[in-house]
Every structure is written in C-alpha cells, then in structure tokens.
Length: 457
Image (cartoon, rainbow, N blue to C red; front, side):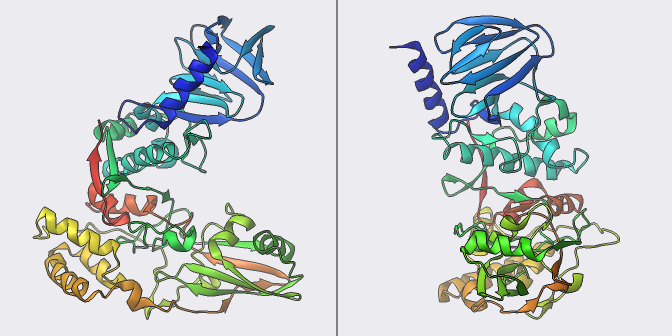
C-alpha cells in the first residue's frame, strides 16, 4: 500500500478511536495555505506522506497548494509532520508536541491530551483561582475535547484553539497551579449514564444558567438552567450595548430572510425561569418577526451583546414572583456545608430528579445552600416523581413579558448581566462556589445535574 494512504488511514483511525486517557488531541491552529514555523531549540524536521524527511533549520515557511507543499525549494507530499527537540513556534506562541499540515484542515498541533489541557486552563480561567474551581474546569475541558473528537472525524481535527471550542494558547501560558489542577484530575471525565457528557461552559451566567433546549434546540437532561448558589462579581456582572437600527435589521434578515425595514420596536417576548430572554420580537415598518434570543445575539454581535440575560434599563425584574439577582456583591461569606445525610445512591437519585426538573428554582437554591435539608427534599422528590409532576409541567406556559428594549433615537440600547451562551458550567459561579467551600465534584454536579465523574484509562 502507498505510504501516503497508509498515513492518512492511520490518522483517521486515531481521530475516530474511542476516547482513551493516553490519546493525542488534534488542535486546528490555522487554515490557509502559508505557515511560518519555528522552534525554541534545535532544528525542525519535516516528514512528508512518503516518509521523506527534510531538515530545515530553526524556522521555515511552508506553502501549500494542490496536495503538495513547498519548503525551501523542496516539493513534499501532504500531509506533513513537523517535529523537533524543542517547543514548536507559530504565530507568536509556543507549543508542545508536533505539527501536522494537511490540505483539508491546515496547520494542526498534535499534543497529548493532558498537555493540551495545560494550555487550556490558564487561557479559560484565572490561574490564581481556587484549586477546586480549576479542577472542575479541568474535568469539564477534558470531557469537552473528548466528546467533540467523537463528532469531528470528518473534519480532520478535534477542536479549534478559540472560544468556538475552548481557548488553547500552548505552552507559553502554562502555570504551575493550573498544571497541578490538570494532574490532580488526570483522566477524570464527566459522564451521564455510560456516555461522555456535553460539558459546555461559559464565563458568567448573570445569576441563572440557561436550558440548552432554549439556546440550541438540543435537549440534554443535564443541560438545564440552574440558579447560582453564591453571589459573585465578575467583569460582566452588568453591561450595556448600543446598536444601530440597520444592524438590528441585518441580524433579523440573516435569521428570517425578511427585510422588516426600519425597526420601530424590539420586545423581549419570552423569558425562561431564570429571567433570560428566550425570544425577541422585532416590529418593523414591513412586518413583525419573532426569533430565538440566542440566534439574535449570535447574528448581531456576541462580543458586544454579551449574553441574553437582559434587564430593563439595567435593573432587576420579577420572574415567577421572585426578583432576579443583580449579579453584584460587596462581600462574600463562607458557607458551612453540613453533611446531607443521604447515601451515595440517594445522592445520585436526587441529582437525577434535579435533571428531570422535579424541584423548583427556589427549592434548588435552598437545597444547595442548606444541604442538611436534602433528606427532606429527597422524600418530596420521590413523592412528586411518583405523581409524574415535573418543574417543566408546573412552569408551563412560559412567562410572556413583552417589555421593550430601550431606544436612543433610532438606535437600541441593551442592558444585561453575564457573558456567554449560559449553558452548563458558569466559570465565575464555579469560582465563587469554590471560594465558599464547594468541591470540584459538587460544582460539576450543580451545573450538570445527574452526571458523575469517572476516570478513563
């Protein structure tokens, strides 16, 4: 068999194999067709699909076209493997492992799973954060990349290095503390039943996480909205964003295909149990359209419109007869976490009931801040489950608000809390929980109710 095809088949097998502790991760660093590559010490070696190896010194430029690459006057067949005794360099960053250049995916960093996480944690969270929060992030990030790799074999890579997946910046940002968090959780992943969980995470929920069903239309029983149990302050605790009428029109047209003309009013027409906008209704001179708030945010500008946790004129408002939190606190108080009095099996059952929506938001907050009450809530949950009464059934229909987004001339001004899609683990909330005595396991089971930690081999 041709060596080139053998190498491609081996790469496909690696990318589609079941997740294992020792596997490598294929991280897409760049598309395009020209790459400037270097090394911190020693010299670079480039090996092509036919096994031909070329030494190219401390740095080189690789140009790709039509299935072949040009390097220092040599013509080499793709894919190319780039190795060396030091850390590899690209685009101002340094990396462990090796590089792979393919026609389809561009430049990839092939790196051991645990070493990949070394370059993720300090890019995603504060290196000075509490160790339990860092461990929770490590487990979540490890699970995320393995789960994504199972669905990406047709793309030729596992993840990209941006927040489109999770941010990865290589060896240059590693710290002793974040590396220790990875080592302390080595091989640990989050599962739901016998499957790896989808461990999406975001920066700041704004007080309550989101239902994946509302954001993406995917219904995972452990990706449900839960309240934050500890108040915290983050850089995005409160924010405002102003958009021109034309930008709003363009966003609505991208989603619906309809040109509404000048938008005269924007309404938050539906919110979830935590107060997060679910739908936005745009009223224009040429008609009216209602769209998902999550789609609206992504098509408008997710960097500026930081979340869909909107607040009229920047204030709190009532949801289910409860006032939503502002997200701001002046101080934090340590929480004493007594023993819940439940057996391990009962803890798993109450986690499943939480995922199934058996408890109300108020009950979840009470249970999480007063674990000594969990025994009573366990009995209540058993009784409710036997009657098949769920929180979703109790809460239907959803709250219809219809409050209008503030106008400034013909422009619109949004006020809100939090940053990100809101699904799964809230990084600032996890930090606050850790600072108040919660363990990594307690943090993860709060944000992904019904899941368990398992160690892979």
